[in-house]
Image (cartoon, rainbow, N blue to C red; front, side):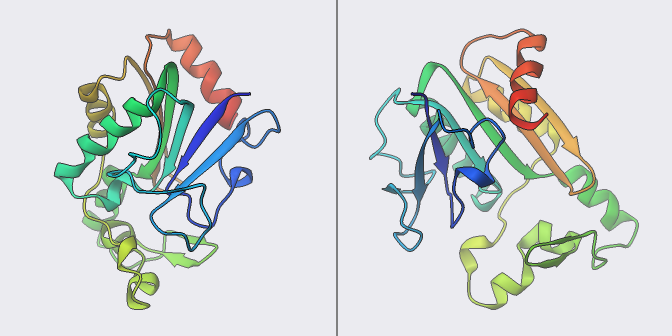
Length: 198
């Protein structure tokens, strides 16, 4: 059975990842920095030594890269590359800084853009971290860097991913990307994206 690493899973399981990963024939391996959420592996994007080389068919992480400092992003992506099989792929979601900054330029810095399960989210929350969580002392959710679509795809390519598909979701100010270790056609990438998100 194929396995995927749910990197920085928090309290989520496979049912809160993608349509494909939620299916019974995918085995989820949950990675989180502490044992609070009972992960399979305790570790971070920067410390994945407990995950074997080329042991995963896929890796997914959501809103975790932007919690790293800019100089740490490449190391995290290199760790992800290391644990992926040669035909493996990486799915990442992060905040869309291009859209967020356009709202700031329109003086909507504090205006709620959408309502998450935790409450209203404004551009300030996506730039620096969700204010209620930070106020509660959860400083691990602070934002230290960010990406535009071009910056994200360029960084993934810099690390060595051969093919990359990315799309912006303006409704929730995010960018989603799929990056493969082996070269794929655009049609293959779109088909893979459709299996996960279509």
